[in-house]
Amino acid sequence: MMKKFYTVNRPMVSAEDFDGETVVIHFDTGNYYSLDNFGSLLWQAIESGSNLGQLPEILQNHFPAAETAWADLVDKVTAELLKEDLIRPLAEPPQKPSKDLDLTILGPAPRPADLGTVSKFDDLQEMLLMDPIHDIDDEAGWPHARQ
Amino acid sequence: METTLGTTEKSEKFFRRLLSIWENAAADSEEVEKNLLLCEGHLRLRFATRPLARLISRAFQHCRPPVTPDHNPFTIYVFAGREKEFFAQLPWEKKDFAAPRGELRSGFEPDLLAASYLMEIVYICSPKRKEALYWFRHEHYIPYFEQAAPCRPILHWWLRDNGWLMVHGAGIGDGGKSILLMGKSGSGKSTLSVAAANSGFQFLGEDYCAVRNDPFPRLATIFSTVKLTPESCRLLKLEPSETILEITGKHLFFLSDKLIREIPDGLPLAALVLPETRPQEMAGVQPLTSAQNAIQLSVSSLYQLPHSGGAEFRKLAQLARELPGWKVIIPTGRPERAMPALKEILASAPSTPRT
Image 1 (cartoon, rainbow over the protein chains, first blue to last red):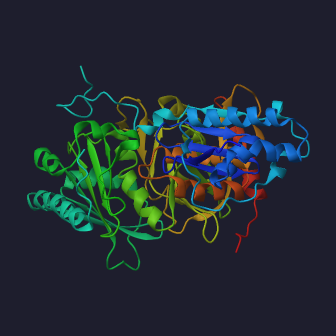
Image 2 (spheres, each protein chain N blue to C red):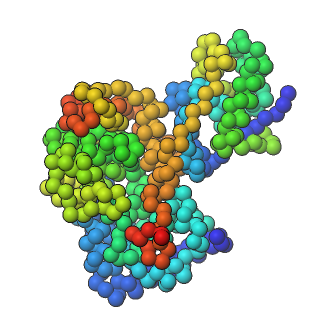
Image 3 (cartoon, each protein chain N blue to C red):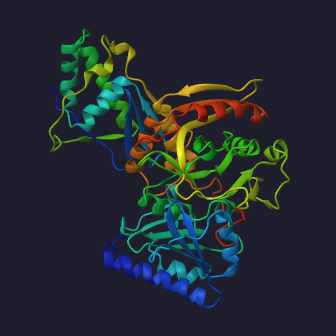
């Protein structure tokens, strides 16, 4: 079984769970994200130091879909989180005991095909700069625009 | 950027060198001191010059002096100019001044926090010393946002240490309870908050307010200013102010203490409201989920406040879980039609704060 350990990209990334929906903020890029219940479970697994390589088997033991379908879903969402710089891989397992995952978050009969939505929002990126005016003349200063 | 400076001693020396520039500026002019009660704390503003005191303290007209002054209040030293002398002491390169959120990293954190608005304004705070430096490049060109909401990053760091959090939102109150109007710039917060004040609500803030969740959710005023577009001025039948804001063309109003009065310990915060203007006849109300509450409350606030992150998000998320959230649909051009909905939201909230 593959060992796949990840960690949250702190301190620039922070997340909070709201009844099965996780809101993730990336403070450096100005993007924020909403993870559905599967993404929330995956985030929970990463936070708790679980081996994501074991997750498909755990899911298959609890729910009817094939292990390969769960493995594809885990890979897809993990790749999305990596691409967005929200998590990073770890070469070694984290030095903390992993916790049991709360699989009830997925409901009684989850289907992999319906899960794994990572919604990305970039409408507040401009707020990372303290004001919308960036092109101030270096010599003359505020409020003179650069020529 | 060199980050070899890392010890508390070095950060102390660095801060003292900058403070000596303020002392020289004050010695050459006429220092003005203001003592304010803001969000339950004693804030002392020491201006190196009288014009700076006039331009900056207008946003705090609602604040009274503290009844029981703190013998060691948090002090902000305000000064301008002396550019070469000032920049010669700073460890940052030009490119560092364009960092996201204006955040300047020195390696001294958390002993010393710094931010800038490009190279026009620099904010440096030593939480341990309970002191901060607030520098402007030009004494007579104070950017409009700085007149409307002065020393925002410094106040954010100070309030945070006192259990309050600065949030991007407008505040209104009625019947001893308050609502925070959330949302991005342009969502209608300002117009709705002033329309609410015209309809008998208490005005608590237009763009930034302070909130806390301990021992129960509360909202307090920070600045007594309002920025409105000419269109909103017409809509609300307000005489345009003399202060026209650069670039945006908005009008900046400084409210007298008759219109806005500081409630230092804040009003109980009953609900979060997201205004949305739509071309329809009737106002409407829709519930928000906790996650929607959190996004509207946290994201635009945290993206504006340097040196804030997970700890602040956690506190705001707690408020978002605890408080009911509503989207209030405002008919275009008719903000007064949303007033019954706002009254109903406040009336239906529990009147006794949790213990």
